[in-house]
Amino acid sequence: MAGRIPGQFRNPPSWMKRALNPKTPTTKKNETIKTRSVEHNGKEILFPTIRMGRDGKFRKSGYKEAVRRRDYMTFDNPDAATKFSKRLSRMISHARKGSN
Image 1 (spheres, rainbow, N blue to C red):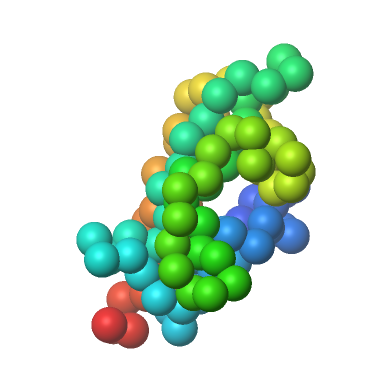
Image 2 (cartoon, one colour):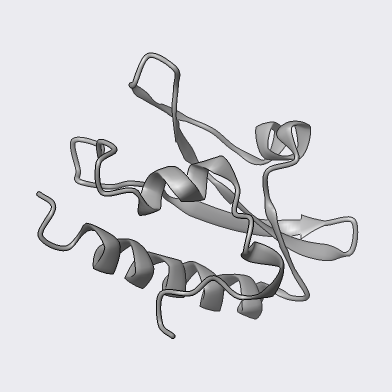
């Protein structure tokens, strides 16, 4: 099933849930999230580089905030993180198709 979140991601972080929800806003560039991955404690972690604040406005975010919040996704290597990030983008596009 193309839209199903595999394994450890069945309880996704709040930033992912928001991005997949077609009722939530996008940035001026029509983005819902941007992600980045880096090595952390021997694993590759994927985290958002933009977040929506409580005021509904988007703001920059990064590695330190993701680690502090513990709301990153863990992968065995950079390729796996990139592959999932691309899959997530397709899932978001599919979820938001026709909602604009």
